Length: 362
Image (tube, rainbow, N blue to C red; front, side):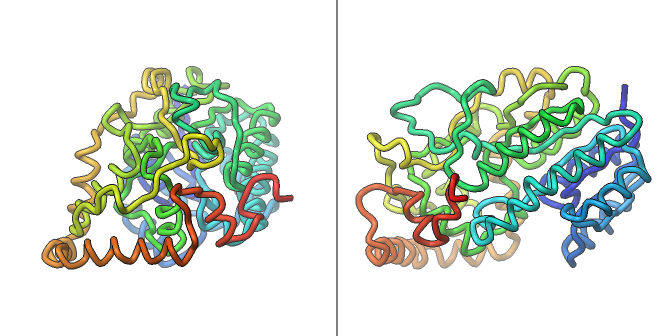
């Protein structure tokens, strides 16, 4: 049965705005839940021009009474739960992240469980639940049955939130996302630290944010097929990459040009904790059920390049100066941080944010 009213949390974010647009274009009523900022208000204005019915709801997930009133008022037939404080910003305040990522999820589940008709609960999870993946020791693809073993607090938050969803008694689908490619990503200092921490030979499975949004929208319409499942959301085989190649493609897209292998340190083949949380997904089942892989990697890269406008022209002119300067800056930064021959990402993260950024800190 098609859900006519859908609640989307994080409705004006990278994936949320595109999922909301798809649902509106399909004629749905969408309760768009998010926090009010200048950015979310601008997205709301754009989405209001689409068909369907947009019902903005600026509510904090940590307010159980407000969440309950919203859910009981509109009684959605499906809930798409995208809102979260993701890594690396979550490392700055792990307690706040836990209150949103786990406590907020529990508030939403409690409200949904009080409805006379149980809604389908589709939650965004993450490759972070799998923790550090040493490709030399674990060369196989990640599947929904691969054991979770989070290494950072964000992955731990998602494991706890998944457990809450399973225990709720609601029909559910857990969609674990790979690395999301989108021109509206936030490239701040925290993100750049994570970039430097990630081994160049780390496996990463990327997905275009438009395809990820389609996966969630299609899950809403295919509840009977996806209920009770864990589904891996990565792009087609063109998105199966090594991190250094992703970094080079992105730098080329924005206009700076490729920095090459010296821009990153390798992972330690003998250290299972010496890798970032990602790997290559087996998306056979998720694609068969959700039919979401609509783009290829070069289309995503071109989308990013187009979004840069005139800045890309300027950066391309400056590229011959910027590239050697950036390589030199990276070398100096590694010396200052006393990094060895390997990336050792979680030591760098813990040194920067404290042990609370890692799993098991509490």
